[in-house]
Length: 475
Image (cartoon, rainbow, N blue to C red; front, side, top):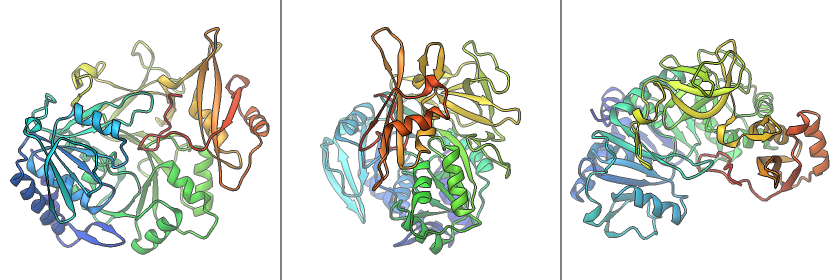
């Protein structure tokens, strides 16, 4: 099978319905199919064949969606690339995946061993030398896409997804997202990192996509009032931006708000709901699995919870020996279900090599309540060990971020000469505000156990984030 069939079916069922909208243009499902087929013809004429690697370097736009489906229509293995990649990151990706060509919007200026370039409308095609024109050696005959993880604690690794895998996880995701034809999603996340269980799923099920020109509160408010979206799908930093806007901004009161990509603090969730009278639902997604957890069926959970397992998935909290733990005990978050990734590229490992008795170990530590809801406590690799106690940076950051004037924070452990660790923090301050560090430490001391309080707090200009908005833990 080829998931390009999603678009063919959508164009037949909803030809005149909007598929992708921006402030400048509206593309219907039939137009999306037509433009994708035109670009496909150009790519085929340039020598793109099934199994070859095809890079797609574009910002959020209708062209990204067109380029994605055009590559899939060719049978190529499509790898979206963020335009924000630094040269070293970009070149390392080219070394790992021999892309035959890169489709971009004219912004690509890094050396790519290109033998020539061509254009079709807004699309620039950098064709690489014939040594890169073989099939991508990913060990998966029906590979559809390769996506690199965001790399919060180290180097990112390529994840291979087959056409069958994409189809399975999009079918599973729609049950949790509870979207249907006629829904409109206001989309703020970077498409290069969020498209398999979202954009491809939207097209498959006739859901319209609205792309704002930027993620400022005023732009989101203006776009929401113009298009009347039924869902805002965003990361916590966008929710914070909306909550912090001092001027008048408005959102449709019937709109659902879904937070994903990283944890949402209970304080931020409460602030947003108080401001807009709209509760925020958390969903938990990861490139290896898809979207297995979320606040579904209209049920309410604690603000920290990422909800329950979607209907197609199973979830467990396991100890170090792989045994299930009782409710509310911290352990390793494990997931089973459809649409699991097919392979890792570097180092190469198949799904079967990675799964533990059928479970995918997410790398997160979590608890499961008596109601089945999951609360992520932190990453296994980022836990700070203090005299036999575990400190989860995310918990400390949630407290620091709730202090007036703090915009964001990063908490990590520093190893002392005696081998023990101490908790330290970096914070950024909201524009026009000042924060007394000792007052901040006292505030944390009223809300945290003594061993969790940062021994040192440093003001910095910015917190390092991955392209998906997650805090980079390596300090």
